[in-house]
Each structure stands twice: as structure tokens, then as C-alpha cells.
Image 1 (cartoon, one colour):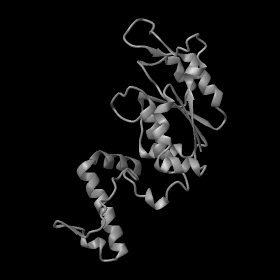
Image 2 (cartoon, rainbow, N blue to C red):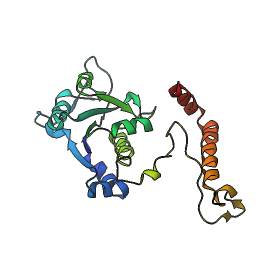
Image 3 (cartoon, rainbow, N blue to C red):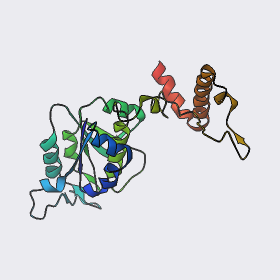
Image 4 (tube, one colour):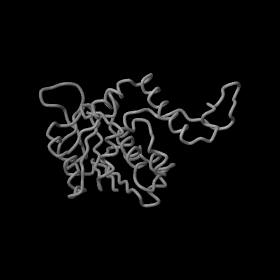
Length: 227
């Protein structure tokens, strides 16, 4: 998979791309991540990419030309263009699974007060990572990249994500490691007895119980999907 990120602040991605699983995925050529500074596509003398909004109002608005030109410079027939915005569809694990199917993602990072509305004519999908506002779209872009990359074949073992939280709209089951008894806090006996059928049943029950306690709204989504 190829991911092109359009941003005003490419240096923000240095740590993200040079550590841990993302770094290994890039080195193993399982994913290609490119950073494109859309300021370079401004035709203005000082490379401005924002201006005051028509009709007045606070803040500066990102202009059409540099962003659209940047999109067009990398877009091909396999591309899905994503706009990061608080107004977008809420990002979920199911969205990550859908995005994994594409060969090429283009992610546009917003900034300042927002986008010129006409930019939306050049994108395919608008995404929000939550009901709050950030200073820019760089962190949402990292979230999308990370969640999609880990699902790509070969990046991590399938067993490591098959039962992740939000898979089938359930939270993950509780996990434990050594020692079996830490200050009187003991690992459930079912996990120690070696009966894999009972372990599987226990984990499924714990997933549902934990979801009911912490995120009952997810079970509502699951029921809707089952209809």
C-alpha cells in the first residue's frame, strides 16, 4: 500500500515513521508513506496557502489551489482521497478494515480555521477521529496510517489483531502474564488449566461483559449490523 500525506508540517511525522511497527513496515516495503508539503504548490510569491474568509470571521482558511494541485500531483486511478475534518464520518476499526483494501490513500491534513469549501469537490471521504478539535490534521493522519498499516498482511501476525477491541463491535478480553499471583491479585484459573475450549469461551464471555460495562453503545451497533 502507498499512503501520501499532504501536510504543512512534514517534520511532525519524523518520529512516527522512524519507530516501531511503522518503521519496520516501511523497511520491509509493506507500506510506502510519502510526505508532501502542499505549501510547495502555492503560486504566490511567499508560498501562502491560507487567506481570510469571504464574509468575515476569525482565523484563516486554507486555499483551494495548493491543496488541489497537491492532490492532483499524486492521484491516480487507484487513489482514495481522504480529508481529515471534525465534520467527517467518525473513524472506527471497521473503517480501517475498509481502507486496507485500497492500493493508494491520499490523506489531506487540515489546519487553521478550515478548508475552502470547494476543496471537498476533490476528495472521496471525510474522516474525523473524534468529537473534539485539534490544531491540525497531522495527528488524525497518523492515527489513520497506524490503524491501517497494522492490518496489512505481514506487518504483524494476524492473531495479534483478529480479536482487537472494536472487532465485531466488542472490546478486547482481559489478558495476563507472569506472575500468576501478584500481591494477591491472581490470574483466573481458567487461563492456567490448559483447556483451550474453556479459554475461548471465557474470553468471548469477557469480551461481551466488558463491552456491556464500558461501552454498551457498541452492542447497539452490533445488534443493528446483525439485522
